[in-house]
Amino acid sequence: MKFFLDTANLDELRRGAAWGIVDGVTTNPSLIAKEAKPLEEHIREICGIIYGDISAEVVSTNAPEMIVEGRRLAKIHQNVVVKCPLTRDGIVATKTLSSEGIRVNVTLCFSANQALIAAKAGAYIVSPFVGRIDDTGWNGMDLVRDILQIYRNYGFNTQVLAASLRSPTHVSQAALAGTHIATMPFKVLDLLFNHPLTDKGLAQFQNDWNKAFQPAPAGG
Image (cartoon, rainbow, N blue to C red; front, top):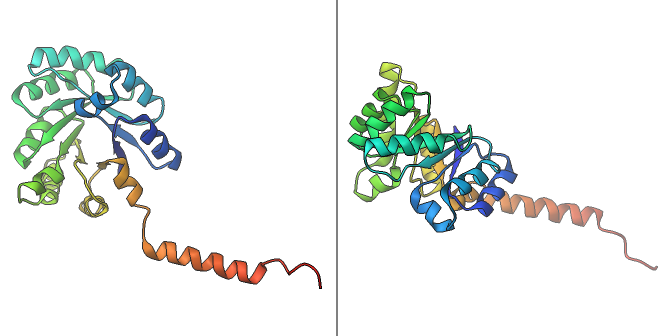
């Protein structure tokens, strides 16, 4: 499973890149807006930090403008994946862009039927929002499993990206389901390292080593 960071913060991306386990980045207009920099300039900087798929989302709401915007975003860098919303216009744009060889991440997916539509339109990635579905009282990971099964049934090549992951448990559940990609905030990626027994074991090893090999007292 690939790990993507769901952030546009350059400091977080540099810290994640230093670990050598980040495969890509997802951004959206809200995340870009927090950084208060021009979209294209900021995406280009991200591409210089993380080598992998970098999702950049259109902000237009009608298909003709999405298509123009998507083409422009795709020219920023070879690793840019254009994000389009799972609306009627977004699907029209996805079909056109994918037909031109532009990779599209269809976002804001909340049902298996929507995911099926995205795959038929040629989506490179579909992004079901696990945490937001959980907020409604439904099980977001069940949706991920349903989408994966449907794609297996018909041989779709669209990758499933589990989005809105809010905890390490979400990440492990996505991995068990067979999700191709998990995107998460930096704080969730950081939490994946943690386990109290690791900390306890390391402290014990260091303590034992220091007792056995501490320097002899000076003098005598």
